[in-house]
Length: 235
Image 1 (cartoon, rainbow, N blue to C red):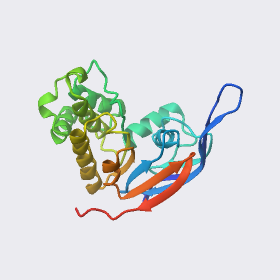
Image 2: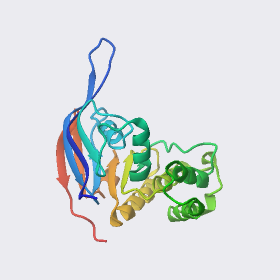
Image 3: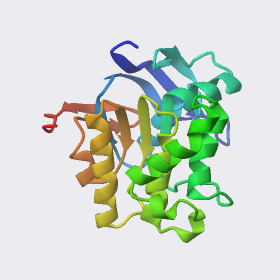
């Protein structure tokens, strides 16, 4: 894999609006993020943060421009190809967790492996249990999401994002619904992933979480307004 994990060139994203005048969420945005970087993306509501993350995750498509992620040009991929690519290369953590409510924490992780078929079937349960152990949820493996606290659900969602060992982890306001202590625990998990060499791309309003990143990108009106490199913490 090349040293560039994410490359956007002159990317625009517009949405149709009543009256026929499109609303532009991203406006000619260009950005390069290297493999192994921990990047926090800041900006006011409506600045384009979540739109940018959704494009990088292959959950939405750009109106124009080129987008290459994990050595793959996403521009021309169909939905099936995007889904398989995403399951193999990207782990996504959402603000509202998006765990399947009828499956246990363990099953939520296993199904992520089943959808991609990258991890051998005989190894999936053990891997899922190991991931739950890592995020401190081993004793809650057989619980449904409704029986877990918000912080526990977010940690389960992080474990699910890691199910197929993706090189890139994306998170959209991962601490937005958590208390300060639980948010700090989630931040510590991201720090561990960064030290292990994962590329992290975190959209956040949480100043404490952003302070841990190696690089802070600020958006305004759908474009990069500032791009600040920070010193990496010692391993």
